[in-house]
Image: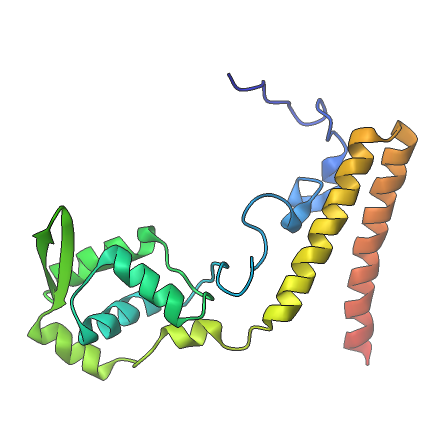
Length: 193
């Protein structure tokens, strides 16, 4: 049974909007499962809209593949920087099949996709490795450092909120608000220089 949902202003985080702005929770972008790069291979990146299509065609140029296999290949070849979701890959496969660019055969409950002649022509004209763009320019060590710092701040705040007095909680909100302002001031100083 799920606990009742607290309306804004009625639960333990009643000051969250004022303290945390649009993020809505005490941990902002740092809290919750799935935050951060989770090491070099675990993050989910996004690519431009046409890259899923181009990537599928580029992979099928090498050999026939299943949809899930394509997702894994793209993640591996991008160094973990981009792992397209099934919700972007499977509709694209259906569209390519409708356009006559690929064909499929059922194999043990899965579809195995292959380029048609028309699809091979488009694949030859497309990018060789569109997944490589997603991994360029990412400083993985810095991302890891940011994630660890954010999670450490979130944990300190969580502990203060869980065990602190009302006065300590208010001080903690003040510290977080001050930290946010100081971070923006760093950007402002850089813009002036």
